[in-house]
Image (cartoon, rainbow, N blue to C red; front, side, top):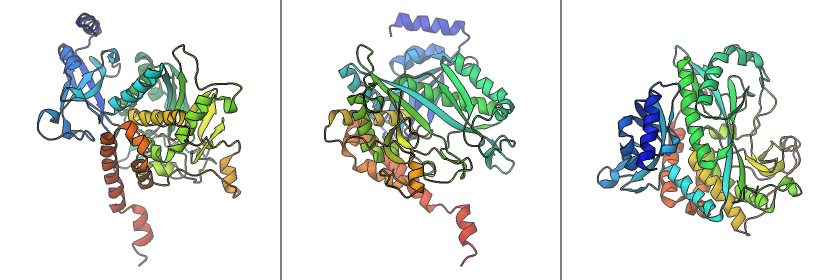
Length: 446
């Protein structure tokens, strides 16, 4: 952006009452981070970046001294927009740099590199992201629970009474998201007590990832203003469905032609769409580490009972025509990737998803996708033959990622090394933890 264009943008922001910019980046664990800088400093944070101590940020791998110890978040000017829930402050997305070079452990830079591979082909990846979340309340004892005490239906999907009871919060979300430019489509109560989903219009992959991070910031802020907690925990309730973060994926060519869709093809997919699906299923075990990156994620990715009758959990590695019992759902000439959950780093998850899909397109040795047109949960209950399952826990998923050389090479050895180190430490901490369940089951049993 030219200095004159930036000056014009700053003038417009001043007229809107903006005095500060919230410069935000995403750490490797997926959390938004950043700082406030005066609007007058915007030219510097665009050209050089807002400075942060690199080792203080999860997953940078930066040293404690020297030129590369400093993490610089360079503001992307087109991302600037006033925050309706924080008067006087504009939000801005940053790219990570160190030593004057793009930082290879910055997840946004990792996604940028994968998208550059698409641009070389004249292709664009479009992504629709579907956030599911819980509204929680912290009790006097400090424990979190479902915020709405009257939300107790066994099958609570689309419960209008709960929407009415929580309309003030949901309407604040609506107002703020509309003001931030989200193409809002719908809000509904999901299939667990206290669980909601908000859908908004799809976008180009990078813009979609930026928008989801802004969605999270907004949802956390609005919930806090109502005395509640926004939770992207994948599986907070044992006998209820968990929260997913489904990616609706489609590719277009330089002429805006849909590359994945073919109404006459199997599942309504073109050969490219079928091969993209093949790549996702081929790399699904490794992708689980990135798309479902917490211990709790695998409570969601389990064949378990639900009070509502189903968990909607995408356990089996197959693709089906509008089949929600498969890991991949083909619908309207696009692919719904049902593996990700809200605990993921959305930039890294999208980068890995794209890398896997491109490997399926480019490498003829990748096996074709397993297609199922039956209810896999019914098949499981009847003892039928099923496709292979996803990893059953985080440890197995991390092992799969470490061994998946094509995916590691595509994402980068350094960022994968940092990610694996952080997540293996988390896995070890979980195993060292003694839970309430263990106390209740074993404390007096000996």
